[in-house]
Image 1: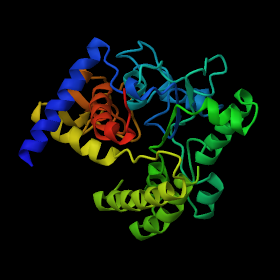
Image 2: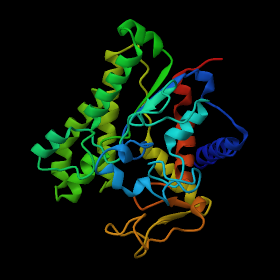
Image 3: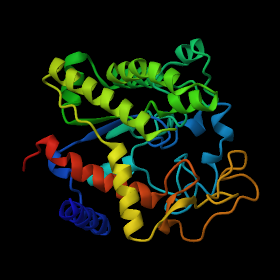
Image 4: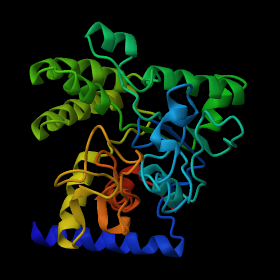
Length: 323
């Protein structure tokens, strides 16, 4: 196990270092477009373009985006997200948010919205769970994607041809369904009763580690079933959970701060739900590249970089790409 961990860390370090040399490890797969669905882990600027809530969110203002972009893009980090690194690894431009009407979508589009849920708002509300951020749940994002394809395709056959070499990233999504339920006082048993609905929604279009594992097990079972039902599509599980576990191990070995938020205030963890990053008087660390957590909820660019390297290493062989 120790040798496997050492080898994995070496491979991640090799990829991690190669980013500065314009390496494109996924270019061999010849993806010409990427389409992303999801929440704040993947949103590259949709929430901040939603009115009226999005326009006032902290994600649309500095210090968000300060490390790479030098201005806020709507990404919930100080710089790049995992989808940015995946796009770069495929040799493609960064994905533009669908709500950016001036964007060029030749190489795909990002439909993810920070704060979004897998279950529609009306379904959550029937369970007395309310989304305080957005109503752009997965079904809404799928509608956007359908509208986009209607605008670029003549018919179904034309779409199949145009999307033959496209990569679709579905998620992470579903976490906010549980987060809102937890914050609004639901029990773990109530959360578990939601899992089949959340997984089914993901297939159709955290408070406890055991609970996250339970969700992931159900999700992988559903993916296996979906793969059997759609043999002409390649469906791969991107294991964010174990990517994050690797990130923590990596961070501890190489001396990154794994507990405190870089941008935050209050207590041992520099985190206060009522005064989060972007609020007046909230401090930002001077060396975010040494921190894993950006704002106590989302990761730093460095954290996402390490996780994306692990994911690419983990899923690359599953694509069966050939020269």
